[in-house]
Length: 113
Length: 115
Image 1 (cartoon, rainbow over the protein chains, first blue to last red):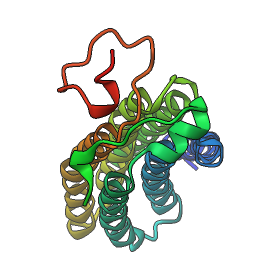
Image 2: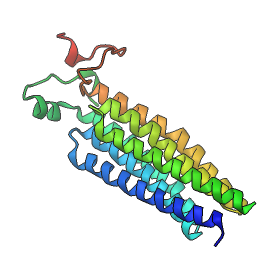
Image 3: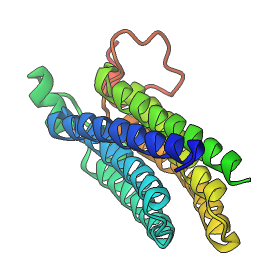
Image 4: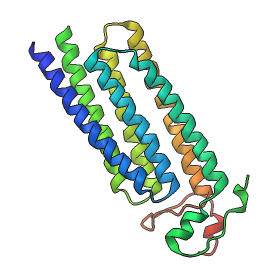
């Protein structure tokens, strides 16, 4: 094994470790919340971390078919975030604000869909 | 040639993973939704794109490299759109800004009319 291959194997290990920490921290934010947009942003971030995992695993194993999966995953993540944004817009933020502040806040009448 | 691509790939994937880690730490530490969205949608996108570029550098197959670069372009195009949509939806739905925020250039919301 030449020096550059050893370097690449070490870099792959380090990158996988960093991505694992990143994944766990993002999952903590998904579970913790506290609001719905926080969870949506964290899920969007999970898609980015999964793309990173796919790239690193593709380099490590040489199975580059995963790149097609990465493109499809990026598309699904984008569409899911857009759909969640429409959902946030149509539902409004009253419920969580009331839960967080313990008071009744009026909803914006312009965003009723 | 392979020596150069091996070193370059290793450096790129570590940089990309470090960006993803910075984005997730920002997601953990920042005070509220709008600032967390900055961390996730900028640093997270950059991390994923740098790692896909590393695949394009590493592979010998031009088809795989072009697909990886197409994925980078696609992700760079869609991530700001989704983040912008989500931020506008959350703002319109009345999610409050952090109390430490110094400026709000958006028009006042119905929920903020009283201050």
